[in-house]
Length: 255
Image 1 (cartoon, rainbow, N blue to C red):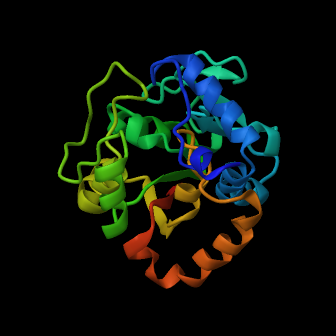
Image 2: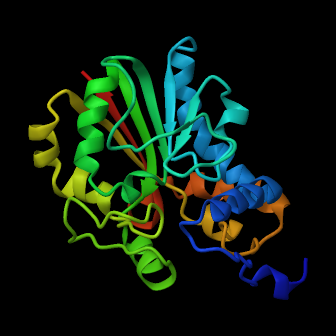
């Protein structure tokens, strides 16, 4: 791949909210080795929860262009869009499951797209079994991430924003700071309104890996064989990722 190709933006001929865009994103992820390895690294967070109870019932919300089903075939995949490869079309604000029926809910870059996240949290509190977990990987609010997201990303990042966002467009309407707002800035609101849900962990990670992969918008900036080197580098800078991470893993448990 030439240097010109490495910095070239991918041609996505559809609008962001068109299901064909998400289907194309899936193709890009599966066919881009560096980016696929980033996803595999993230999926380990979900795998860890499934390993605690392999016979449990697990839901992935907003499966999008991902391929979690290839790794964990027992997981129910879903999206708000009518995608050909998912199990169910689901609105996160109205989960079609019985009370106390799920052992886990997995989300990768989904929470910040939900128009009324408090409805999702209310539904999660209802459908999760005792000790069931929500595991979400979301944009982090760090010095580096604010710079990247506000200067170079198409989605808004407003850490001073409200508890809800405009509805109507499932992908183009978002606020990447919603996880920070709910679980850090307004933690008291979260605790008072969802008393059965407890935040177990907020772990900051992924400073360079996703950027270097090009995501779904650009071609990778480095060859695939360099992934392990940068992965080791990120482990080395772990103590500083509270200031540099682009992403965070948030684990919430139903009491």
